[in-house]
Image 1 (cartoon, helix red, strand yellow):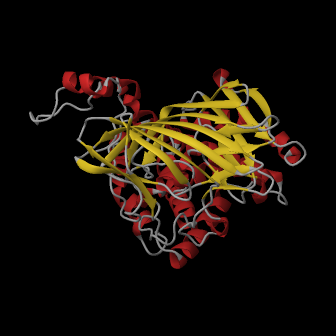
Image 2 (cartoon, one colour):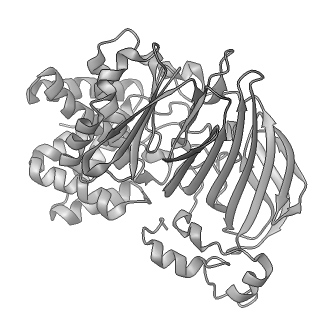
Image 3 (cartoon, helix red, strand yellow):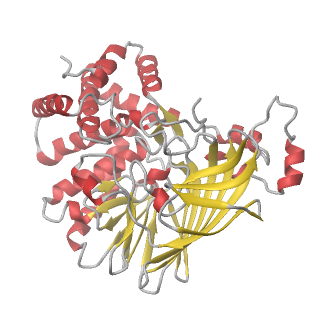
Length: 479
């Protein structure tokens, strides 16, 4: 099963007790309401159908569906200590004697389940809370914790894997995170798998002179506390938080879209002219893929050597572009913004289908680079096919990734080449209509190869199964 995109239907089935069930031994919604005294329906849009990942079965818990994360965080740059209280609204998928989440590197101070103190252990990157839970009867888990976050290893040979993933801080107190396929576990307890998306509220308190930038829609700044809300479901890997001596630059994008960029004066001055192109970049993407899917946009600059499509607030590592042509920075902005449609609005069910994210974002970047650098279609065709051949030989086909080669270039370039073949077969008008419809009809859901193939065939009235399968599975570049 996949996540449904109809919030109204979910609200009807999640009021207080979660889904209705034919099991007459379980409490009725009225009985659960009397026991919990909490109406969980405001978080119905965070309902998911979690699954076990084939590549990384140790991450996530398919027995839990986190509906909402409420994070209250305080960062002290001078001591480099993060103090947090995480309140999770959880719908158990199955009966269990414990609540098991991903969490590492921080000290747990107190844990409660439905306001009753509970026993918990934190080891081996897991937080295990002793609590009897019943399927479809939501509970509230609250965890108080503190410590200095540290990144963990990335299961990849990519160049940027050397910096690790997750949250980290520098000696001067600057805080930031990059976290794919995981890393949220380094700063809050989380069910860290893309199949369990949830709603978020973040409140981050920092000292005077500092600012907090995070995923979600920016809310009011109350004193030194910065607030962010995600009313659309978010996969944990595209959440983010950065604290620095930021300056906020606000713009208005298409349809009145609020855009907020966070930059550090002097350090990020060279990027300002490109960041200010954001309204035009989003318009370019909208012309091809339909309306931007969220109520706000923006980017934060951080100390990474990479870039990340964190939801509604891109994470752009200045270390990746400090010596390069600013056109590269511009093209990567397009890539990460394209992910707001492909990867964020429509999320893969498991990491096996990461190509669904990166193929579309890379092809969008390729098309933008055609205009930016002025190369023709024949050049793009030659580049994609030659690069595809090298990557399949070195890493393998994009549809069959291995656990130790996460997000290598084969899941970027090879599916982008496949999408170009599909574009060539359909023509621009039908291809972009197909891509826009994929997002519109599957927004806020998890999808996989089978659903994508079925969608393409149904929407076009043609059978593209062979084309898609050959580009995803063939050990050599398809003819």
